[in-house]
Image 1 (cartoon, one colour):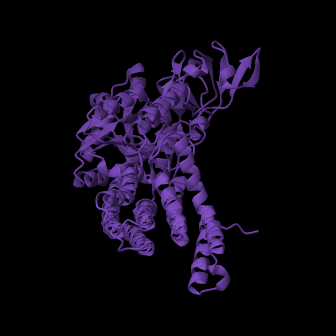
Image 2 (tube, one colour):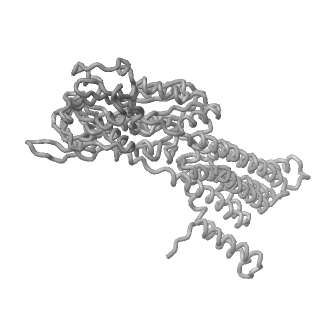
Image 3 (tube, rainbow, N blue to C red):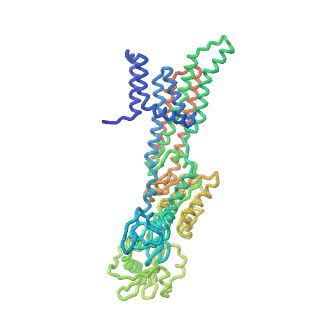
Length: 625
């Protein structure tokens, strides 16, 4: 059987009841029949609010929007204005539906933080491989990690050198070569061969566990944003309730002082109840979440996901933006940027030689070189047998010629001279020597995203001048990128805890509102700590995406400025709605207290304000296209 929502049932019964009343249907005119009919219409939308009001009374919270609307609805039923009692709850219920829909579609439980933890570890015991949970592996035991697997525990490297992808853990764009005896951290990913690691720390003290703990602590330090309507209701509710009481009490006192003043209890009680019904902020309750819902829908069309209306409002107050580097401002993918050759050699010869030697390696740098050769349509040899020199590079014989491919330390090891300026290059170099002679090198670097420079410029146009970069990469690389983008402050060689400390220092200034933009697991603590955390949704880690308040699904940093612009437009229209709702409400309250307005007029006024709020929400979405 098809399920109908509580709001639809209530609305249908309300419309039918009004229609029967206007049609003067005889059986419907009996008061008991009308009461029961509207009570049935009231229950689907009114009972949840009454339940909340009762819970608040139990917790000794006497003045909030639940209490106000409960009093208003009960008052409407008391004076026999049943349709208005149903309409009050119906409007509030619809408003809550809009808000809940916007939030539930955007935010889910932060379960991805558990998903990044390896669920099992391969332990070598008595020469046999055994699968255990990381928590069950003891310090001193040996674990084996295959290519593509994530390291489950901190340990010490055994065997020869191996390459590890550390981008999600430290933010470094360059894969790290770890040699015998060096530390291997939980969360790193093996990229080139099977390795064995001797466990040095239990899981709860591993690098990955510490990051998860920092996320939890940062979430606790980040105070939740309260909805405006609830702050407003704490003042508004007791005031209007007190005024409603005074509408009855003051005339009664006057009648005692001036005997010629005619006081009829039922008449003044009617005015007080009308005043209470009119004072219900249903139009305001609808306009606020609906405005935010419109803004969230608008930015969603642009590939920007907000996890609640409070973050859409918070982003308008941002005056400091801090970017991660790798995967945020850059693509996190190596590409050959330049080819340098010595006189007497051609670029094609040098690229073919280096790519042929590197073709036997699964290292990300080797893959980037192979991809570059393919893009240049340079054929390479696949029959080259190479010897790996741990920490230096590769050595081989090609057509009887000794070929060396690797870093500058490789040439120093064999006493081969090369241009001195190469030692000061911050980017990744792959040098090549043939028969003891340096012939050229390739320069590789992480590629800057196409819209990164425009993103910084767009933020400055929004008067956000404090823009910074935090990264685990070398300071020289970070500074060079900052200079290209026009960012004045850039900090490299940072661990996750260093980023947290830096953002905490920024937030110590009460006038500063900080947005952090990142993509890795290492960014999760800072994303949780910042006033607005922004994650890259395309290539970002699940942990960063789940903990962030805003997700840029297109991975384009330039979308941040667009999100701020739409947020400001949304906030402006919402305050326009609030001002109008207050104005209309105040006028009708005065008329109601004077006996010049009925509850239907109050409901129609609320409907008009709510319709305007809907139109404004549509306007927000149209302006975002």
